[in-house]
Image (cartoon, rainbow, N blue to C red; front, side, top):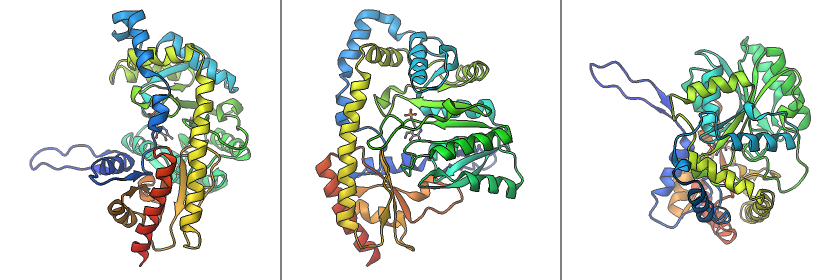
Length: 402
Ligand SMILES: Cc1ncc(COP(=O)(O)O)c(C=O)c1O
C-alpha cells in the first residue's frame, strides 16, 4: 500500500510503501463487535503470559539499575550477540559474535540489509505471495521485485531461473522465508534450498533467509538453514525473538559477514542508535535462566493444538464448498484458496459483519493476483474460538457466494 500525497505548489513527497497486513490488523482492532481474528501473525496472549515478563524486567532493573536503561553499543549487547551466535552454531550456521547485529525486530534487519545491498533499479527475487512488509522494504529502496510463485515446496526456484532469463536481469538479492512461510505456511524443500544456493551463486546475489518461525515445527523433521549449506553463495540470516518470546520488545538479529554488519551498524546509527537496552537485557535474562528450549517446546504444544483445531474446523465447515487449503507442518498460517471468482477482500467485508477476520491474499503481492486467496493465522484465538470463528467464516462465505 503506497501513501501518496500532493500538496499544491510544493514538491511532491516520496511514495512510501507500508503494509496492508498492518492495516487489516488496524481495521480489526477498530471493530466494535466481538471478532475472532485469524488476521494477526503475533503470538497468542497465553504464550506471552508464559514468559514471566514482570519478573524478568524487575530482576534486570534491580540488578543493573539505570545502566539497563542507558544507551548501548549499536551492534548489540555483547552477551546477546554471543548468545545469538551460539544458537546459530547449534543449527549448523558458522557464526561468531562479531557476525551478529541485534536489530529492532527482524523487520529492521531486513530494512538494514536493503540499505547495505540495494541500489535504485536493483532486482530482488521474492516469493509470491510474500511477506508484505519485506516487499515494501524492497520498493522503498527503489528495487524492482521479481515475484516467483510458491508451491508446496516453497519458492519455485526453476521458475525463478526462467523468469530471470526471460527478463534478462541479474538479481542482487533473493529473499525467502524458508520455514512455514508468511503467508502460505509452506517450507522450502531441501532440494530447492540447494538449487537456490546454486542460482544465487550464478548471479552473484545475496540470499536473505528470514526465519522467524523455524523453531515452531509441529510435525516432520527440521531442515538445515540455508546459511548452513552455503558454500559459494553469500547468505544473510535474519531472525527474531518476536514469535517465540515477546514481539513488543522488538528484538531480532541479522547474521552476516563482519563487513556487512559494520555497514548495517552505520545505517542503524541514523535510525535508533541501538536496539533498546532494557529489551536486550530482558531477552538475555530469559536466555541465561536456561528455560528457552522448554519454553519453545511448550509453544509447540500450544500452537500444534490450535493448528489441529483449525484444520478440523476448516474440513468440517468447508468440505464440499470448493474452498481448499494447504497443510503446513508448523508456524502460524494456512493459505486458503476460494473458488474461482470469489474475491477475498469482498469476503473480508462480509466476514467482519459476521465477526471474523483474516488478511486477503492481495496484501502479499505487488503484481501477481492472489485476490481469491487468504492468509488464515491460527496463533491468536483460543481453540474453542477457532471453531466459532470458522463457523462465522462459513456464514460469510455463504452470503458472498449466494
Ligand atoms: C516472515 C516474517 N519476517 C519478519 C517478521 C517481523 O518480525 P519482527 O517482529 O521480529 O520484526 C514477521 C512477522 O510477522 C514475519 O512473518
